[in-house]
Amino acid sequence: MNTIKKKSLGKRIVKFLPLYIMLIPGLAYLILNNYIPMFGLVIAFKKVDYSVGILRSPFVGLKNFTYLFSNNDALRALRNTVLYNIGFIVLGNVISIAIAIFLDSVKSKFLSRSSQVVILIPYLLSTVIVSYIVYAFLNPTTGFMNNSILPLFGIHEKIKWYNVPKYWPFILTFVYLWMSLGYSSILYYSNIIGIDKSYYEAASVDGASIWQQILHITLPGLKNTIITLVLLAVGHICYSDFGLFYQIPQHSGLLYSTTQTIDTFVYRALLELNDVGRSSAAGFLQSILGFVLVLGANLIVSRIDKESALF
Image (cartoon, rainbow, N blue to C red; front, side, top):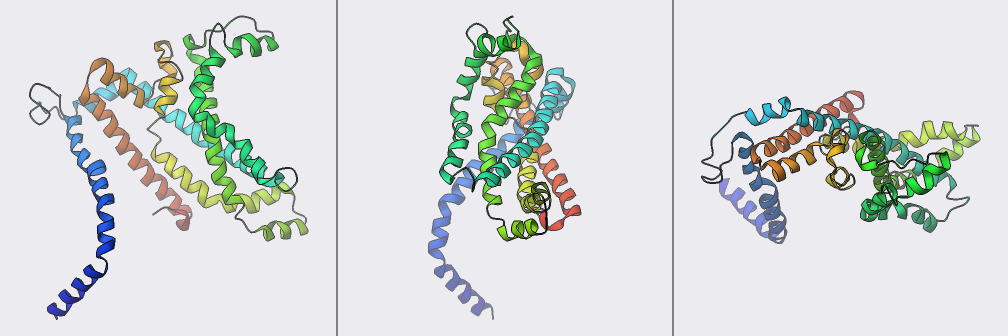
């Protein structure tokens, strides 16, 4: 019996050998890029001494982690990261769904498919040029806001945008939405056009209004997509777009109270303090919190609707 099993196993190996060979590059990349670097997690529990190396550096246990919870800058960075991401998740999905529904509702009347794509091009291009656009708008002396927009509202005093923290939660939220709405709107729009139009026709015959059709047909049709995107976003709730929070505010120290996030805190800890252990601890904490949040959010979804859960 064992001989027969070995022969059948050998035949399967030979049969699928080309597939196994094709698997090698991807598997090698996964191991080299994703698993071997996990050895570096040991840095989070050490006070790195370059003269003796990582392995011989003194072990400090959880001191690097307790520092994160006792340091005001770290706590502020954690607070900012979580609050910004909650706002991004809620506003980003609501506005993206609204844009997708708008495109679907007017496509047959006013817009061709090509013109719908043209509408979204500014959002797609903005990821490349957004930092230059923001500075052109907010430059204290030559910026479009101070010289053209504010005077329309009777405000002639030039605001030093890069010195005043209170404006930046709104600025960063607006910039994030401008960068991300095109991509997320396309995702929702592609999902909407896949909904069977006979549902809308039947609802229209029954006298359902546009809002009733959106509430009872469109949104239920988007449910799985919304849940998937929200769960993925929740997994990154402790991460932030480094370019958004570092480059857009021009690394202004006066704005740290509203622009510093965990990612920028880690970068500055490495750049200015050269504290590899605490930076690694912050990154490790991000991963753990993200993992726990995804599990928790997925558990809640599975309790409400098991078929909509990711796992």
